Length: 167
Image (cartoon, rainbow, N blue to C red; front, side, top):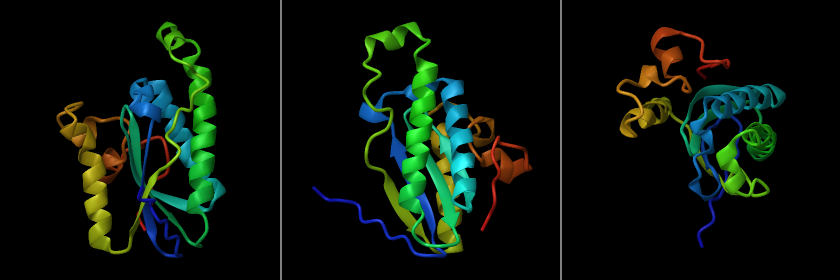
C-alpha cells in the first residue's frame, strides 16, 4: 500500500484533507462543524500558523494551513483530530440514532492527505477547489451559501467563525 509522504518545509502551505472514520457523516450536524471550526482556530493559534482557507463537508474536511517553521503539520493534525474528536463524541452522545453506532470507534480516519502548496497559482486553485466542494456535492447553489467554509471571507470579507489569513 502506498503511504503518503509528508514533506514539512518552512514556507510551504499544506493542503490537508481528512475524513470521518468509515466515511460516516458525523459532520452533517452544524454543531459538529462548529466544533471543527473552533478546534481549527485553536490549533492554528497553538502552532503559530495561519489558516488560509477551509471547508467542512458532511464526511470530510479540507484546510489550507501555513506554518512559518517546519515540523508543525503532524502535531497540528494530531491535536486537531484529537480535540475535535473528543468534543464531537460528547455532542453526539445526545442523539438517539447514534446509539446504534459504536461511539468507541474513532471519529476520524487515522491517515490524512497532505499536499504541499508552493506557488500562488496552486494556492488559488486549492481555495477554488475546496470552496466549490459544497456546490459540486449539491449542498448549495453558490459557494458563499455554505456556512462552514472560508468562501464568504474571500468573496465578501464576512466572518466565518475563525481568522482567515492569506499568505
